[in-house]
Image 1 (tube, rainbow, N blue to C red):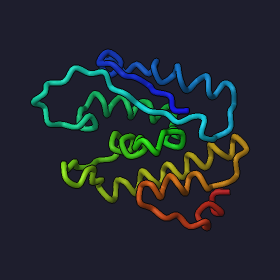
Image 2: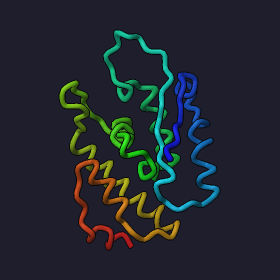
Image 3: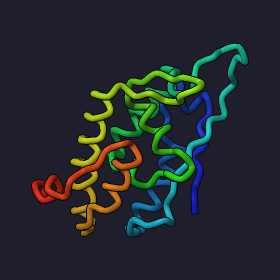
Image 4: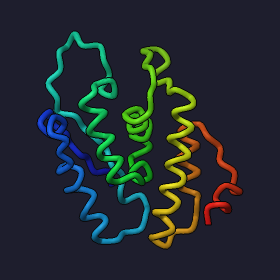
Amino acid sequence: MAQTITLTEAHLQTLDLTPALAVIEPYLAEKKELNEEMALRFAMDLPRDPTDPRELSELPEVRLWFIRLDSRYPWLPLVLDWEAGELGRYAAMLVPHQFSPTEGIRYNPEALEIFVMEKIFVISDWMRQRGIDSPTKIKFMTQMLGYEIDDGLFELLT
C-alpha cells in the first residue's frame, strides 16, 4: 500500500524532514522486509505562480530538500512507488536534467550514470546489512532508469 509524504512550503524552506521521518522511521523500527507494502509517494502542497513554467524539480528549495532526504536515506529509491512514476521524479530531484513538454525528463547521461552506480553500491550494502542477498529489486530499479546491470557487478560487491 502506497504511503504519501506531503511537503509544504515551510518544510522546504526549513529543510524539515519531519513528514518523511514520520513515515520512514516506523517502517525501519519494525525492520520489515522489502516488499510491496512500502511504496512511497510525494505530494507537494506549494503555492505556485501559475505563470511559472518550471517543474518542481527545477525549484532550488525542492531540490535541496530532496538532497537532504537522500543523504539521510540513500536507499530510498528502492521503496518508492515506481508504478506511479516516483522513481523518475525522485531521480529528477537529484540528477541534472532538462524537461521537455513533449519528451518529458531528459537526464544528463553522465550524471544519471553516476547516480545509478552510487545507488547500486549504497542499496546493495543496505540490503546486505538487512540480510537480503538478492539483487533482483536493484536490477528492476536500474532498468526503470534505462540501465541493464550484469550480475557480475553484484558478485564484485559481495
